[in-house]
Length: 410
Ligand code: GLY
Image (tube, rainbow, N blue to C red; front, side, top):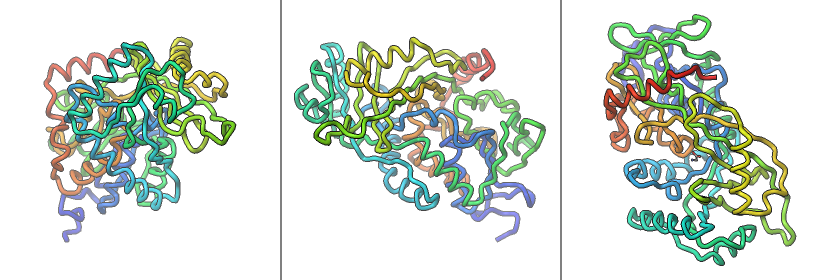
């Protein structure tokens, strides 16, 4: 092989520079870096605090079936493909990092509390059945038999045994260690400007002025991805921040009789507001989440906490007895069609892995595999073709740009 070629023959930058610079060290950036390093590429990541970002607050539901929405059938295919990869992906990651990821194949129960919620859930069930998904309608009594802490007023529900969970903080920590062990270099600073040379992406200038040259660049900056200076307007990703407030509580060791407080994820739409409770084997109970279009604001508000606790209390009255250990907010990277932007842009050498919105943790395995393939071979895998960054119009980009530039991120 020519010394200036990557293992797959793609151009390699001068000695000492990485083949790939990943901008953003959340779970999406880290999985991209880890998988690309696994393909023999030299990889660097720029992020002041790798392992942070939206996933550090997320509940980690792998809810391809229970979070299905009308009009998102194409996204469903990618979500299911990623969910299927989770068992092998977490096994491989745990081996590479020596750390646990908290993957728990526990299933999900989505319940309804009143007639409107029940009608909504019936429609979701019909959509799931039409989409060929495994979802079973239960009466309120059957729901309470599965989860005795549910309120007596529960009117019915959907049992989805294939929607599981992972602990996103453990996942991020394991990815960080796996990257370090695979030789990924970390620059603990924000990337402030994309460098373009000879009509292609050539690296980035970091806060403090350091320049990192690279053969290819992946923009995986979550909700900030639309703000990187130097990215030509025509390829800037149309992502916007969507705030989610999330609470953490501590589960009791066991209830009288040895019964778990909750044995699976429980979710509902209470008077139009989605609420979910994710019980971990570690004893953590995650309660989420608001969905607020408030720009870069990450304030935890009394109203947000009140509404989450109020809705969760209607669902599981015993929740108010539990210690409340954490209240935080983070920003999901929303895109115009709620689906991610994956793969090459029209600027040679610049790739996107962003816009994952509600599904960043779920889509982590498939994103890593897709981006590694693109970076190593230049070919976009079939599964990722509908998610090309080129699918958005200049108007989509302009609207998103106006919103992301409204104020500074905090
Ligand atoms: N997928 C859960 C959320 O975005 O709140």
